[in-house]
Image 1 (cartoon, rainbow, N blue to C red):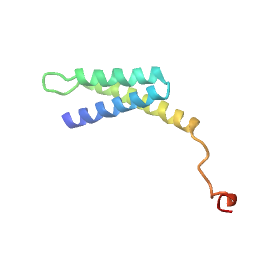
Image 2 (image 1 turned 45 degrees about the vertical axis):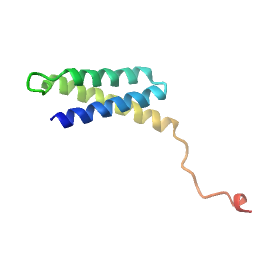
Image 3 (image 1 turned 90 degrees about the vertical axis):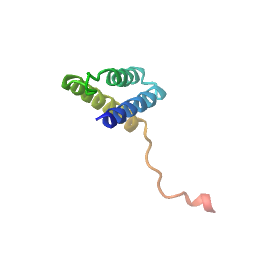
Image 4 (image 1 turned 120 degrees about the vertical axis):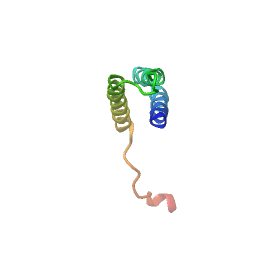
Length: 88
């Protein structure tokens, strides 16, 4: 379980960094808050409550969707075959 929690913290921290670099401060803040919540949410047995995990799952999904939408909007048309003039 600790490996799972640690991996999710790393994902959320990475998503926060990406969102911040893309100028998406609210998404970055949301991801950072979720990562912080995850690190401090463990009970006495080291396992967060189901309500915390549910909240984190929803937050992580929202952050991922926001980043995917931002990437799809900013992506350009994939490169096509090289222009013949390049090799002339």
